[in-house]
Length: 266
Length: 278
Image 1 (tube, rainbow over the protein chains, first blue to last red):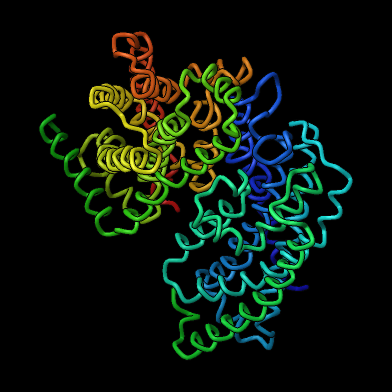
Image 2 (tube, rainbow over the protein chains, first blue to last red; image 1 turned 60 degrees about the horizontal axis):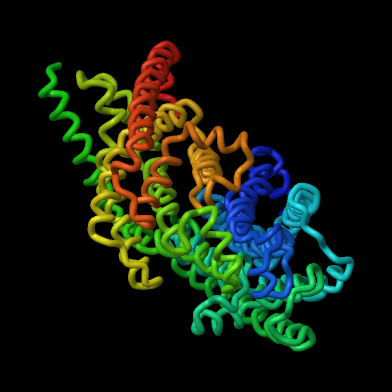
């Protein structure tokens, strides 16, 4: 809790950064995509999107994609790269020396990132509904278990990434590209069925792909990739695998850093 | 200081920037990766939005003048990539000198201030040119869009006429960044502004009237429209004379504005001593 409170307090000191968490997804991805989609409208209807995913709610489709982009960004930048900030600031070694478990450092950060994620996504979805005319069905709530399972998987991924950024000298490019590719492969901006075959196979390894598919199915009535029950089962399997694997790799990285003295290196 | 000496200082400023670029070769990987993947995402999105429905593709053609989705997106994103180079490169050059503590030393040299302001952007032209080539090759190999040699020559002319505008935007941004100190969020904001108004991903006809009025006074809007016209619609340069004239005039105005803003900033800096502050 103390770690989460510290992170939230730091974020509160930079209100412009906080505001940009809402506005950056809007002007960098959502508005360009919605206007691009508007160029394909026939009599106000997204016929192409209807044919591709079974729902013509362009704004709803894209805003739900932004929710999962938010999950990915929180994992990649918030949790994993957050530890890198401590390393760059020279405070990571001091934090490591406290009698706090390493897991607490990662999970505490995940908690603060999760709170910020929920707040920013709530604002984004309200904007989606009232400004861009997105329509979400009440059955969207049925997707909450899938989102929860995907979050557990993504914490496992966060452990893996945290290990990688602590061991790397140049982590920025790595996080930027992997975050981008995860978003693309999860289908945040388009259905993964338009991806070339090899990339579709990769997409089906990501928990975010299934979580987003289930979310869109229940919230805007889109056609799911697989039966939702099967998708839930895959999400359970991915959570069971990725969490312990992530923790194991992070522990190995921790051991290596303590041996090499890399915690204090910048 | 003579004009010849200023010329030598200008060349030295370019060489210094190029040497620094060579020391950090990781930008090269980014130059191969981002100019292909960023627009490719929108091409895939376009395929999903069209759903291969002829009516949706016709609707797209009616507002853009072309049914070539990949070409339309890549030309728009060529401007985005150029803008990114201008903002992150020359746009942050003065601020970086300030952070390193070398800006004050540069100001006490007898070279013209214009060398400091307009030297770095010249070095980054080569980088922008390289990315244009990467994008054209990707367009051909990944999406099968073949650009005719004559169209490429015309596009080159449009690029040359856009150079003053990009110089002006970079120099103006450098002056603002020097005063604000907050580079990252400023780049995001300015790049976001241009990408929303200049029709990078979508035709500006889908914008509301007030936004279209803003787009009309931004030089990158003309670059995107004219480059698309010559590359995708087979337009000749003669068909675009008025547009190209506006583009050049806006570019020269941006350069003049940047030089004026820099003079004002310099005067303020001498009074407050902010050149050496970080």
